[in-house]
Length: 228
Image (cartoon, rainbow, N blue to C red; front, side, top):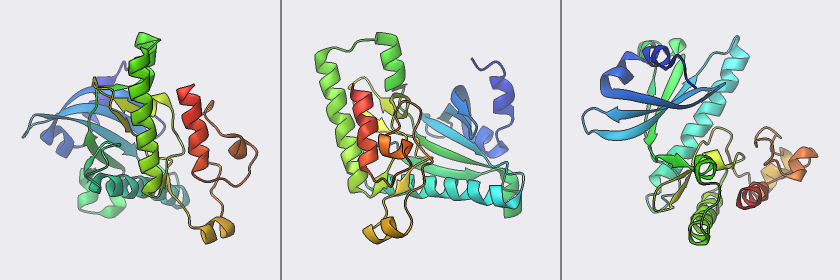
């Protein structure tokens, strides 16, 4: 799948390659890549999300920085709530080496997070059908995670099987907050509705497809599609 993964790792910053032993690529998209790595000083396995900032002009770059900073703020807020282990802990945020001397040289950001070995999409692809007991435990933990996410004031906007990390005990962690938003207050909802940006095809709620105002209940539609 990743024919040139060695070339991809060679593009990672010297700081990352010094502190981590990069293992394999887990996924890639328009934003960049996600890889597993071993932290050399503790031998802890982590996931590293490399987000490319390649805006062709200042406006596009500013918009990219807005999305990235929003993702970091949301995941850091959730990580600080130690009683809520329903998302991977954000351990570090590391800019590319050149940006440490001059912020105008910021080209990419590395997010170092807890690693879970599987996601629900892969589990369903491998096993096709889960036992009743497995399905009940996964669904329960999944619903707890979404409930706690909303209680923390966050709307995910991209719930789908591949964004649900799982371990052998069927514990579920919700990942990838790149499209997430802090829930607006009632006044903010009236003044500036949420944009329709977000949600993957097949998981988009009807109100978003129709261009109507929406709130965290839109996540519940995506939850229902996953459980179905």
